Image 1 (cartoon, each protein chain N blue to C red):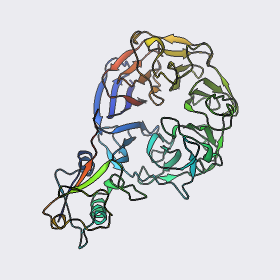
Image 2: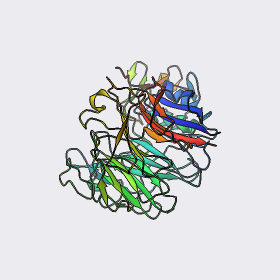
Image 3: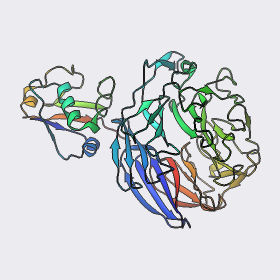
Image 4: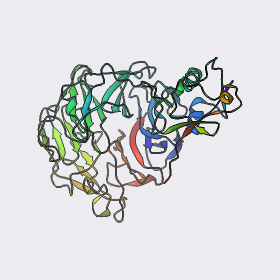
Amino acid sequence: MAQVRLLVGTRKGGFILTSDEARKSWEISGPHFAGWEIYHIKGSPVDPNRLYASQSSGWFGQMIQRSDDGGKTWNPVDHAFVYEGPTGTHLWYDATQHPWEFKRIWHLEPSLDDPDTVYAGAEDAALFRTTDGGKSWHELSGLRNHETGTQWMPGAGGMGVHTILLDKANPGRIYIAISAAGVFRSDDAGLTWRPVNRGLKSQYIPDPDAPVGHCVHRIDMHPSRPNTLFMQKHWDVMRTDDGGENWHEVSGDLPTDFGFPIAVHAHDPETVYVVPIKSDSEHFPPDGKLRVYRSKTGGNQWEPLTNGLPQSDCYVNVLREAMSVDSCDSCGIYFGTTGGQVYGSADGGDSWTAIVRDLPAVLSVEAQTLS
Amino acid sequence: MIRVELPFHLRNLAGVSGEVLLDVGPVVTQRTVLDALESLYPVLRGTIRDIVTQRRRAFLRFYACETDLSLDDPDKPLPDSVASGAEPFLVIGSIAGG
């Protein structure tokens, strides 16, 4: 019987939630690194007990922790994230140029085939990689040095690399997304990059269909369809079927197409989940009703999933890294809220339960399926 | 020996309780104390000073002998009572209310 392990990052520490395949009874451990912001925890696909955690503090800066036993014990590894070569500048809020300044790691993406290789997405936007299990980190500076870099501007939440998608079918291909620059693709393992944002339209930038400048909140793909990506943008839910060359909107009948996370079902590449949020000015669910929306048609037609979720007086947010699916036979889906709840569904979203209700604000949720 | 008092989270990272004792050498300044601290506990690199610029992190302060030394030149000698070990060098995290 499979086990499911949820790696939950919060404003005040990390938590690990484990269950058997029934996913009815959960064991909770934590807080790990109590008092620190844990932006993201993720395990290696080839060695699920090898975990990496991004531990951050406004006081003390960035740490990276590594576990070799599924989160029972942790050890700090190197945390020197140093931009390679001239630092350069990007666009600042007042339209002046501002030097790149490292602030934190938003996302850790272990390699698909080597537990010692991990990609790290940084604020201010940059991509780092370790190939020695975290003993040292080196920037893949082709991204930050992209010719459009001087046009990238932070959103209110900063300018960070969040999504990192590795393509098993095309080993050199990596997608990353930056708020607020857009999606970039590398076909040479991160050495060079180009923006792939054609079709995005963003009214909050001077040229709504500019090549860069879009506030992409999250993208996801199904490994069996690596050219099909789904995106939750600042506004709009989007889809591409040609590796990002062209995007089209699939918001369809959503009550609002603003939101942060997006996730693809583990077994059906046309089933997609979003959590609509009222607006960019009101970061909570419409009408105080927490609803996950599911499309079984790859977008456009969406159905609300409400069974077990609060349908009145709910004013939490669900952040971009805070939704994930497992790969059990009946796909589980999980999300965490800024109110500290982690909700789970063991039946593809038809019904939900609160696994835990009173954690600190949840920043990230990653599901691992352990055989 | 130089006595250094660290905030809670840095004591946890370094795996120490109470004060840290450092052998600093003849010149006792903020820089030489922090160099010795980071040499003994490499995990603390970047947590007190920026890893590249070596500037004090914005939300940390350095106190000793009831004086705020945070804005002093990092190469200025620390008070004699710190250099003699009579008084600790305090690394303090700014308060966070709310």
